[in-house]
Image 1 (cartoon, one colour):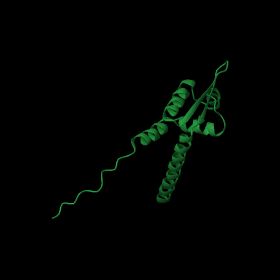
Image 2 (tube, rainbow, N blue to C red):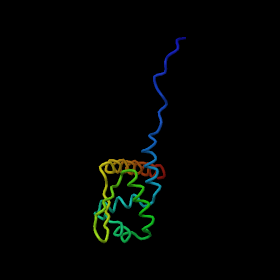
Image 3 (cartoon, rainbow, N blue to C red):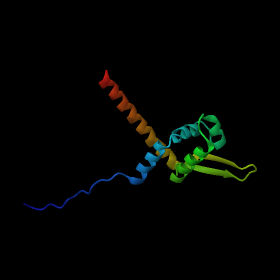
Image 4 (cartoon, rainbow, N blue to C red):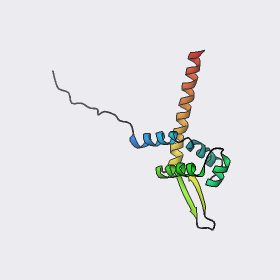
Length: 118
């Protein structure tokens, strides 16, 4: 029998993007922050005032993590009092499209589950 050279390597998950998705879904406020930004609310103080249960400390952790991933951009204005705003980066817009596709997939799964129950 002839020894064939193997043509394929074991496929692995994309580690960085998978870690990002896991972290973002693990943070219960990230998706809400994205919704606020889409609605034009881009200042941290306004975000905290817009959502019951969200504290400044937790929001800052969420914003920091999203900024580290490159999903959000932090814009500091040299003013007194200091003003900071956040916006979705170009990379963040691509990332959010992936999250939207995951939501669509989840809806399909939920619909299939409901069909099997009835």
